[in-house]
Picture 1 (cartoon, rainbow, N blue to C red):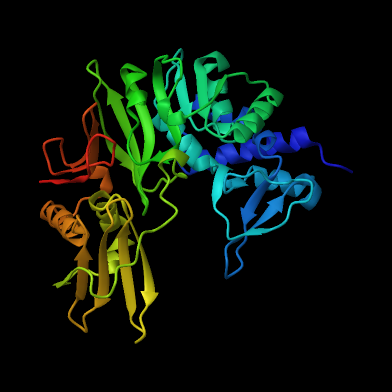
Picture 2 (cartoon, rainbow, N blue to C red):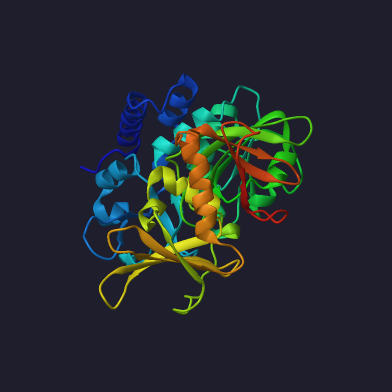
Length: 404
């Protein structure tokens, strides 16, 4: 006998809600009611899941026809991210195949992160919300259920993604205001909102989001760079066009906004005799560590890094900034630290060491001890308080850098 999709989905939604509540992500009855009511399976009729096989990362397709209705529903209501697009191209679902060596560009984010952000948005009855990044439309539907569709505006850059979301929302009975356009520009009509939430990562807070926030409004977004995510920030907008707040989590990550994605080229590998060499106690491992990696992303916002084996078997790490054509090359220095060779207009490793020194002097605090201030002229991440050490975010109006 074929399973009853509606009754099975209802049972799975309540199981998901209980799981998210037990884990502490779902805290309010209004959002719990939304999770228990919105049919996530309507937003992920077809998706890809990453396999656990070793080697090249591979994703396999999941549909009701491929795996059966019960298994498709089980996966649709799992607390997992489900990929719905790769490399900005639509998938041929008439004959889906496993996909390797691809870059996910749209997904239904794991529900734990979705509800965590919705709880942190601090909405109240009667408020209006602008969502940046409609994606599958699932989080849009949750907000429609909580606030009513006429109080939700969602902006999606990709027209194909937006069309699929619109269809899913209509099937589910929700009709928010959906816009296809540049989410970094916000609402094309310039309407103001009580809350703004971004489901894509951004290198800085687009100032139109501030301009389109009512005084006292809240902006919730994930700041990130080309090396890693910095974390989730919640900003409050004042009457003077200034937004300020703190990092409230350092373990959130979203796909970066396409308009701010890294250049395709990492940059030019320097010749062996380029730059100036000196010793350093800091090796490349700190670039990948949670807390020091946070500082590295602030200190070198335009950089990316990779390692390659040298002819003698040792590893060489290249830190390249394609925007400034600066570089730092790290090589082992026997048992006594590392050598760094730097060149270009910005001494990348010097900037990182200055930032590390400020951080260590403050007792190496967690990223949640950092905050951000946004004005029309400057955006800066600061340590401790707005008067503390600060790092400029990469915007069009100011070059990045550390200010003690």
